[in-house]
Image 1 (cartoon, one colour):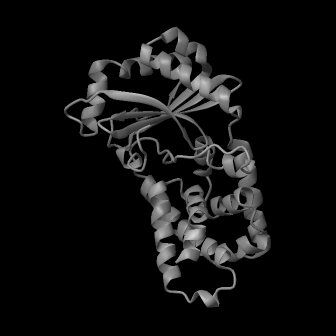
Image 2 (cartoon, helix red, strand yellow; image 1 turned 180 degrees about the vertical axis):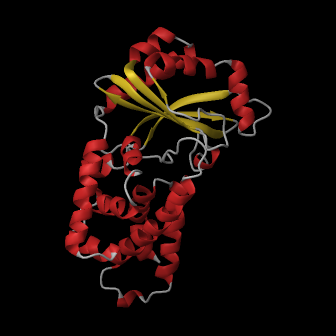
Image 3 (tube, one colour; image 1 turned 30 degrees about the vertical axis):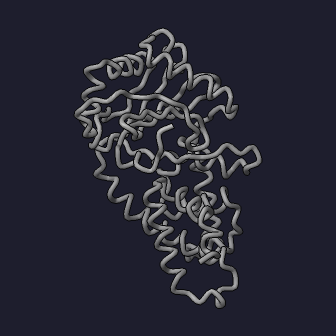
Length: 296
């Protein structure tokens, strides 16, 4: 199975970008492996193309199923964070396609539109190959791609690409939040900053998007009290109330705050930063989305 292992990282990358879920991506790649194990390798002219096709089709089917389940999700749904390694040589489109803000926008596309967008824009597959993957004629595939590009262009937020600047602002946010410094937080925020929290009904979290610098600041300071932090820990099954640790890590091609307790990751905070100001705060707390991450 060395041929499959040679392409595993690519298959995971494709599946994750289509699905926005690490667990679902891993399940899809495992299913692709099972199908590959039943194939005579000598009969496959292009193993890479074959495996990408199988993985993409499985991911599209899984996304259709997942979207129906997300209709009953408790509170906002956010993509699962994934650990990434900074690589200055990486293709810009491939790196951008894993950013949290981009994955949130991709959630608004149909499964076929999302698959076509990912395969074309992130992985630069030719339209003829994408058409074969999704089972559509090439003109229809080009139309799907055009519609997806226009939608992403209209919905995609601007964000600063300077990694060092983003890290400095993330560090300042972490310090101001931990220190309860209201003025410092407001200074970091855009006027219409938004905060999106994903607890999935399994962790104590805001059920609606919070908007406005003062509203977001007040909420952050309120949840940072010992009593409310204890309530959060209890909500995820930590009754002994262990100490929490805060660290920076590179997740989804950007600096992120990783919060750990008792040797496990319990929350991730990712910031969308534009023109030196925080535009959006993504807070992930659903324990089902933390299991694959390691404390920093």
